[in-house]
Image (cartoon, rainbow, N blue to C red):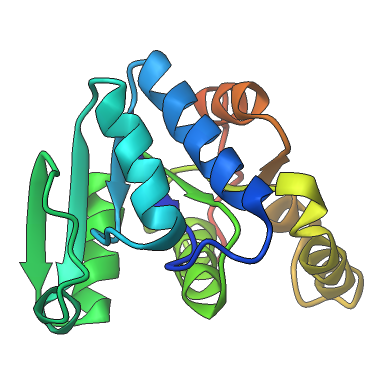
Length: 186
């Protein structure tokens, strides 16, 4: 399985975030899983990539040319694809991955996981989307997702399609056992 991981290009202000990213990468590698990610050497992106590489697995980066030119690209990857735009980056990552996981991050992380989730609802793919909820990082966002559903803007089956776990083992198990809901507008 190739897992696309979306996460911060910084480490955040709590060492637990970097520890959790490393723990997740280590567990992925121990389970024979490969990583697809944004191609950066910085922040949690670099931490998870380094952990998967150290575990002997493949790591595929996809980075826009402008970020590569700022010397943010990780140089030790199995493969680094350089693309023209963020739109191309997300499309290529989606094609390469079998599942999508958001670790702690900022607006870019939210953009990426929400787009993957939306594509799943619309039937563009049947791949699982998940939040690795490190120390409750996503609790308020999950409450808002429940609010969207309660207000009638998100059907309960599409709210429930997002996996939320706090331990790597439970998260990987849920990804492996994912069953998508019926496609929206079918």
